[in-house]
Length: 368
Image 1: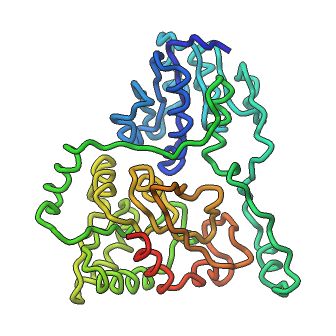
Image 2 (image 1 turned 180 degrees about the vertical axis):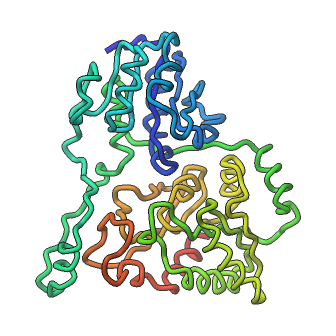
Image 3 (image 1 turned 135 degrees about the vertical axis):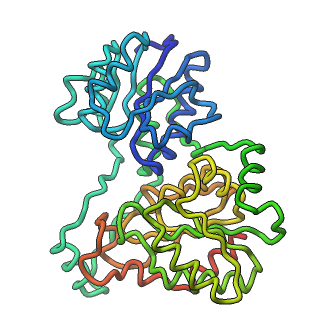
């Protein structure tokens, strides 16, 4: 492998939360190649995530629906020494192959190994996020609790950040874990405070992120968010800010309506922010109460404590990572069918219904 590479392309992942989880590997690659020019090939919707990031010198954007050969044409003539692909898709390997990059590194997967010069063997301790069938779920919940087989404990090295660190190690980078890290400037924060009229607020600002792009199986019931927000505000005198994407507007509008009709304070910024503004607002929050979402990962990577609610997904695999300086709180029930990794619950939503308002309130109070 070329340890003297000066011009490196990294094919980034396609989702916000996953992109945040690549940052430890990106920082390790920067350590390994301190003098290299590192370019990130990223979906256009995520390009602003990398502004001021020390691991990245430049981004090349992929537009929504852009054809493979159009992307490859952007890479030709750039004289990249090598490319590393974080996604496991055949397309990501084909992009750099047609882009005529001589060294191409990615995980070995069917239908794409031909396009790689180095097909990296998957990690021995990787855990596959397999969706359970409806039959499997019904079998799990029907078992007697006393005779139920306990799931084996998942090691810390199974977390998704190690998938990307292992690929970086194929280039000689240190595979040791780091916390995911993102960056916003003080000027960006002040601009966001002014734009969203938060500059005159002296109360602590708490964030509420009740949506989830993946599907309803990842969403704690909206009525519980409302009840928890009211109780927390009564006990802390905080100001809540509602955050999320445009697809979360129905949920946040309902929460805003319920809380504004009481004595409590809330501001709804859902769907009204750019990505950089969302990052600045998350940095301003004393804590974020959230489902398992992209903004959850962004907040944690910015150093904001999160109280994260997990149902159909696994915090051991994709949860926020705590440290001695930054402690996150994870809420999950003991539902035997969790994690199922499904978008919609085929039974009675017991994984989310098993998480009480009181547990969320206490977790937030413990964090702040």
